[in-house]
Length: 317
Image 1 (cartoon, rainbow, N blue to C red):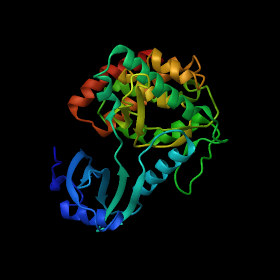
Image 2: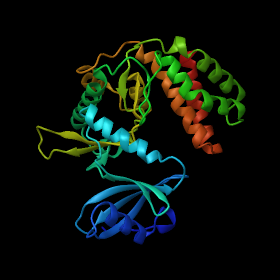
Image 3: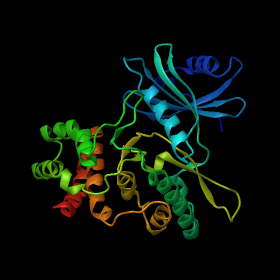
Image 4: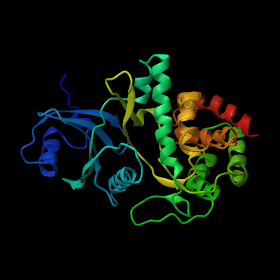
């Protein structure tokens, strides 16, 4: 089925996308279609299909000072070189006709959320074991002495994981505490948690490479086509790499029913998981939910989040 174009939602119209592809790939390429898959406030994400059948992911936004896509491209390259993670190949990135852009290979297969919906119990167990093993291998090797984000020209410099995590959230938490998006008792409890991070996040103080932005829609699988080989990870997207605590990556997947016995068995075949994780994970889930409230703060979304936040806070107090 051919892809369709929604030019009003894309940073570039179809002709502009065609010119960009000719400029960044080859002057002879022909574009079959463009389909918008994400309509962010600033960034548009599209799947581009060529006449030859190749598909790419194209991210565009209006040009502004500092190209964040340079950071993202750097993180894809770092992840590809530092770990056995299959990540999309960076085709090109930069500036074109008043836009920042990033062009990537499109991962084969379907994302984890859609893939799990069509599996038998045994297939689900095999797939989650393999995903756990792969993530455990990413986390298993120490990555230096300091905690911090991995950005071009910037080196991690903090010796404490709770300190880094607290600084990472300091401005966002201050914004939430000044807002009226959440009930007063919830905000009071959030303030208490944030001030208690050095105690609540006490644990592994060895910096390790973490993805930092995991979600089932960012993990892609494809079938090997052979019953004895099962499923394999075909691509992991949208990294926010850091030298950090691996428990953050696991906790990001907890609300999606991914971190089950099969996943943990695969993970622990490569990486030890401290028992204290099962208490600390509530801290990370709290901050993940707060970020959704902060960025998607409609009344309906906030109302749905309050119950979950209250449940998380009960585990922490």
